[in-house]
Length: 229
Image (tube, rainbow, N blue to C red; front, side, top):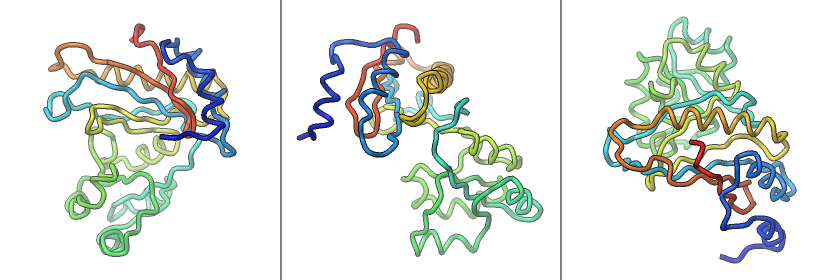
């Protein structure tokens, strides 16, 4: 894969053989974010889990103390008095059955997170084929299937992010923008890592965290030492 000049210059700053301490890695990633837009800083955590086994799955959510720097659009499936509650809490879209054809047939996906009250999961289940592959399906473990829609919306708007294993047993999570201070990124990184460490499946034998790396959207990857985790 051929990289541009900016990437190549940024890559020279990174020693591929070194596993950096978190604070040093964050400082380095900020230096390598040289695109014209405010790049997202992502963490990639390779685990020793085998996601094909249910007892080794990792899935949950954590509220990043400084948010992600992204405005998140929330869709809530609700009925009755929960509709007004969701609207009052700042949901971007609220609805029920009438949204099914819009999402299924018209391909409407102008939202980042879906919240549903338990009594609406029968309706939402019909969208499994559309929402599932995009990681948008509400899930009780992530706090997105709940009667407390106010708390769910507030948490998401405050910077709550979901984490889960992908097919290659890696967790990919944004922890902020390149414009964030190093301190804010470090606080977010620490909050995420504490949640990931707590989420270690009891069924797992062997090494849990195989590697951790940080990267800006257009920048090179920086390895982080797993020693303290």
